[in-house]
Image: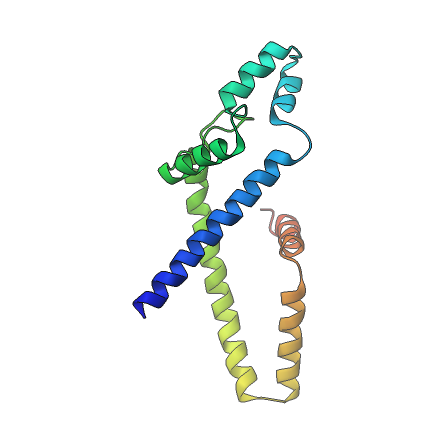
Length: 163
C-alpha cells in the first residue's frame, strides 16, 4: 500500500511539474511582451530602457534558466511583485486566503446540507416522480457553468440583498 501511495505521489509531482513547464513556456511564446506593455504604459520607447527592464525581470535569460528560477522562487514562497500594483504577490495571496477558505468551506457545507438529504431521499424513493425531478434538477444545476452561476449569484445578491 505504501509503495502504491509513493508511486502515485511521484506521478502527481511529475504531472504538476510538467503542466507548470508547459504553461510557463506557452506564456513566454504568446504574442506580445510584458516589457512592451510596461514601457508603453510608462511612455518609454528607447532600446536601452527595454534592455534594462528585460534584465531586471530576467526575461533576457534562456527559457530553462527562467523556469528553474521561477520554480525555486515558488518553492521558497517568493512569488515576486505585481507589475501593476508593485505589491508582493505573496502578501496579496495571504490576504485573500482567509476569505477563499471561508467561501470554500461554506460551499462544501451548503452542498452537503442540500446534497445528502436529496441523495438519500432519491435513493429511498427510487424510480418515483420525486426521484426523477430531483435527478433532473441536479443535472440542470450541474450543467450551469461556474462563471455563469457566479455572475447570477452576484447580480441577484447585489440587487436583492444590497450586498
